[in-house]
Image (cartoon, rainbow, N blue to C red; front, side, top):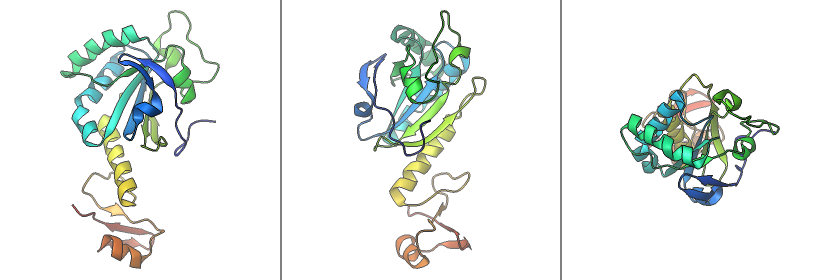
Length: 217
């Protein structure tokens, strides 16, 4: 059974380039993003880690910790970070998990239980380790997305999705397609018109089941 939305994510102990972590303890009371890669020193992944590094201030504004994972070891991670930082033009302060035994990848259902890395493994041997997991302070999975190796992930979309999740959780609303901060939000169908008026003020009724409003501020 794969990891599903609102499942509690696995709590694992792992080595990173910044020391040993216990995952739930590392998350603490923050939001967290785990982003995975099939191998160090690969081209698309280097650009993605660079993009994450460049967004450090944005993650911090949202009270969100980010952590990478790759199937290589700690020493490779430390060397690779030099390339990442050179490419990004900034420091990469987030840790990278060393998942050489594939234990974390399997717990997050990125690889089947019987998977193993052969000698002289290539990225193709762990190609499905290309996922993003957004996790709430309650340690539950809020969103996941998986990309192929030849298409770089759009971390502006990850940031937008994080904003949507945090807004929905804080305000008790939903967000529509292509939503960005400041756009109208959707009032849940479980809220009556009367209660919606009290809670949100003015709102637009597009259909009886689709009501839009703007949040204060």
